[in-house]
Image (cartoon, rainbow, N blue to C red; front, side, top):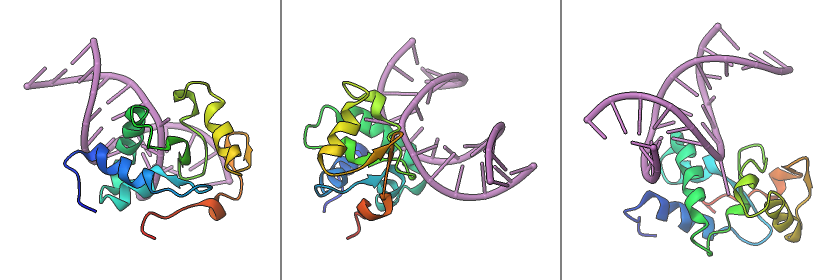
Length: 107
DNA sequence: CGGCTGACGTAAC
DNA sequence: TGTTACGCCAGCC
């Protein structure tokens, strides 16, 4: 994994590796990239990720598994719907069994 | 160039 | 235990 010059590119590469039926968090990605305190920037990167179809932004949520970024999709239901399609259970914008479906980029 | 904002996270009160 | 404040980085005004 060669580090891209662009911070966003690095984020996209990690997100792209998220397997089907799994999810991860902004902070986890940030830490993996070595910018533990830049979780916010990771989220911002996701904002621009909509231009990258290979980046499943819907598989990235905050540390508690809440779909905080759903409003940034086409429809506020798109994110939840996509996750449910992958077998996730969403209740009140929160992923149930989050610890089970959680995916660590380091593995 | 300076300041504000934001898909977060952690520490402090 | 719940709320508030701050840091971090990039983009926009």
